[in-house]
Amino acid sequence: MFASSSQLKHWMFNNEGEIQSLRQEANARYVEEHGTKMSEEQRQAYFLSASEERHLCRHFEFVLKEFCSRFQPPMPKYVLGTALCYFKRFYINCSAMDYHPKDIMLTCVYLASKVEEFNVSINQFVGNLKGDREKFANIILTFELLLMDKLNYHLLIHNPYRPMEGLFIDLKTRFRVLENPEKLRKGAEEFLEKSLMTDVCMLFAPSQVALTAVLVSAAKEKANLDRYVTETLLKGMSPEDIKKLQVQIKKLRYMVKSQEQIPREQMAHLQRKLDHCRNQENNPESEVYKRKLQEMLNEDEEIQTKKRKKISEEQKKKDDELLFMPSYVPSSNT
Image 1 (cartoon, rainbow, N blue to C red):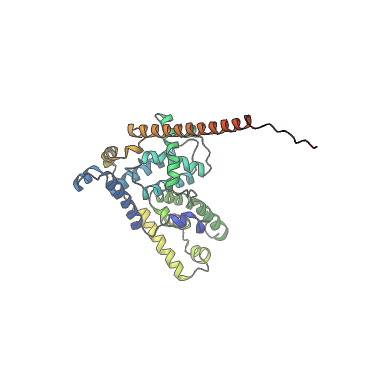
Image 2: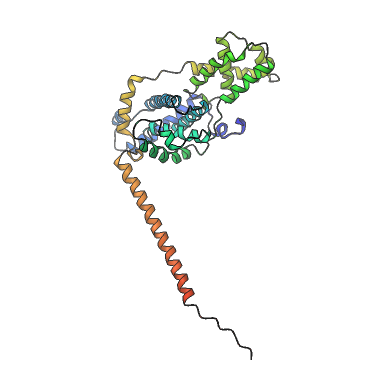
């Protein structure tokens, strides 16, 4: 139930300004940590701004969507919805300069596939990618635990697809004056697809998104659902609550309709800038990362060696104690 979910409790925000503020804080933390010896002018030239980070992340949201649409075997739409939700959550509190969106994007899709029980092995998954598939597999498996940690292990996502199906069933059973409700499906699905590319999933309940999608489609098809909404769907709701819902629906429609185009001509420049200012310790292809990983492996091996040595010494001590234990001589009764 969405009403008792971690999604509602931890990942829903009051307005877009609140989300934007958190993203700006993540950007500022990274710049402060990595630009200690730079002037303000140097920082602005070297690091990505919060708005530039957002442009890059939105670009990779579209790349993620394209990847899912071409995936074989065909990927259910709710897996895409979950993956995008993970991606958006991750970059609320993390900077794209700390973790490259291309790495997190693939990890989000892989994790979403597992959580939504779209069962594909890591080899099947990377088989949908061009290039060094072994490298992609290593990157995904490396970042999977990090992703879950940054999501606070809140992995269950309530997407609007199920509520939308519920609305179609309800229209067919309780509003029979509408001929062929299925004619609204295409427009509703198109609206949901557009909504995925916004921050709607962190601002509106899935049922509100689904209802808005159906109403938008009905308006395009010139199907009047006013009676269904007021007399059937919202029957018993107070006028005040109905008015609040109407306001939410208007906000949602405007947000989806007015989403800004991605400045694609800037993407090459922003990606080059990111390549220079990204955290090399989190770049699987950098020497810094490889050296750090090797140090961790060496440290783990050293710990295991010490454990084995300790176990061996303890076992030897026990063996010695058994070996030199005095023989048991029974007492004689006289």
